[in-house]
Image (cartoon, rainbow, N blue to C red; front, side, top):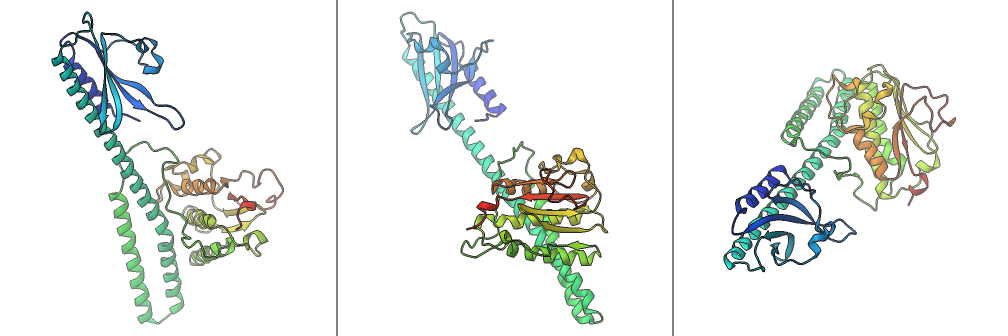
Length: 378
């Protein structure tokens, strides 16, 4: 339990307010803690007086295992749950405790238990808020791909319509509506921005994969075809070269287990980054290897000291500094890859594990999605 500084200060103040009262010489509050697979223990979180003494748990202090008439323990309890204990030391002779002191200590233990209960509730609420904020951010991020595709197809349609002004006007209205949705999403992103709290990788649970129908037969090819069509349309619009697989190996045509549908999200994120951050005349595409997929662009090469940093949450590489983005695309893509037993990395020297597989495939940036080929298929 990560206690807040304010909570610890409150506990100390409560203990201090009781100190030097009716023969009490020492007050120590312990919080019950238990890690999975271990027995419960009690850790010190506050004491009076504030002495230069190593704060250790009850189990690690041999002196506390010997009974003493000058010591009593008061449980810190919320309903039937033991949250901690209060240890009280006195200078009484013979252990004759006044009933008034006992009553006051019971009241103090109830007050301390309430403080712990409120702190636990506060932490649970913060975790819940952060969970929903992360979920919303992921949803917003994933919605941008189909919205961008709608804009691309609308612009291509305008080109094909030629002089059909009435039809063009309808399509242009669609583009306006698409921009409006983007504005709403941008506003919602700002509204949903969390307070700057430290988040470690792995704390988020992603609302993926998109294949919610477990009975639907999917293959790598069926997952990637719509994404590649979107990429081809975008490349045509930007007058850039586009490359996609001329043939599909057997492992891409065999039915997949439902959980591997996230492959589509990974590839979509990689292609989105390629179009967003590479130069407008740079070739973009996808190629297939015996163990995975490669998304590449032939734009400006990512500098070597950013090869790993670009996968960190929130990191913006030198190529992305002047462009919109959240710095979560590659973070999410690698996280999903590892979640399904694969990996995602930026290749160095165009090779996969120093093999010959991509020896003659000379592109500036190649992101390699390695997949657990034997485990993919249902």
